[in-house]
Image (cartoon, rainbow, N blue to C red):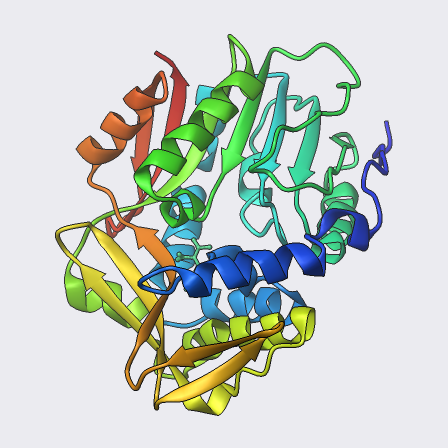
Amino acid sequence: MSSTLQATWLRDDDRRPPDNFILEVVQRGLAARPKRLPSWLFYDERGSELFVAICEQPEYYLTRCEIALMRAHGAEIAAALGPDVRLVEYGSGHAIKTDLLLEHLASPVAYVPVEISPEPLRQSVQRLGERFPDVAMQPLCADFTRALRLPIAPRATRRTVIYFPGSTIGNFEAADAAVLLRKMRAEMGESGGILIGVDLKKDTALLEAAYNDAAGVTAEFTLNMLAHVNRAIGSDFDLRRFRHRARYNPMAGRIETHILSSEDQVVRVGRQQVRFRENEAMQVEYSCKYSLEDFAALAHRAGLAVRETWLDPERMFSVQYLVRA
Ligand code: AVI
């Protein structure tokens, strides 16, 4: 059987948030005290490229450790998922870890990458379709935080497994993470499962280094949010007058990323003039870190139970298999 490619995505502009929506979100965020902007604003085309570059930085252990884990335990993980699985990957991007799972799965029914950016989606489906010609490729260009209409599977499926690697769950605050896990629970159905990458609590210096790489890629990624906003809504943030800061908050168990104003300044946003004071911090991302117990409690809130956990050899990162409690 050759790879079936169901073109279920619409044009880029139909899926990305329209600029007037971005204007509303930015104005609301700048009116909040303290100011805050949502982290999805990082991901324009340049932001997605910079995120790929972050994953290659030596300090950003998350990708390296998750890949090492998948290399060490891929066969065991695939065995836990079982045969005839339909694999649905949330926020698949370039799907760099997916090979390490697909190569071990027994007769997978289909691979459904869910990704909002059409270009990485197209490229990953092309690459994986060539590498796994017997697996039906059913890409879905969509925002995985919204209700999904999954394509009809090409044959009988034993279980739907939602794959959510990269510790992206850490970018959601606990209440929102529980809501997202509940949504996944509904989408996977009675016999389904969730295979999820979860970054673990560790030494503050290691955590802070990962979000303050020496080459300055993360700082550029953070400030690119302002360039994205300028392009989308015609605001006039001057990137040279802001800087990146990422610190670990041990009480909350998360890296908190802020954009700091280097001086007293006024920025035009739509018809509004927004004042920033010197050193004023605008919150742009949380990256939550979990102990195994913390994450089991979060899963429990969403009606899920941890069936199995795998760790990388350095025990920095976990991949967990969740099923209905
Ligand atoms: C996508 N997400 C899991 C990354 C993280 O580690 O929170 C995003 C990121 N932000 C800065 N560096 C990486």
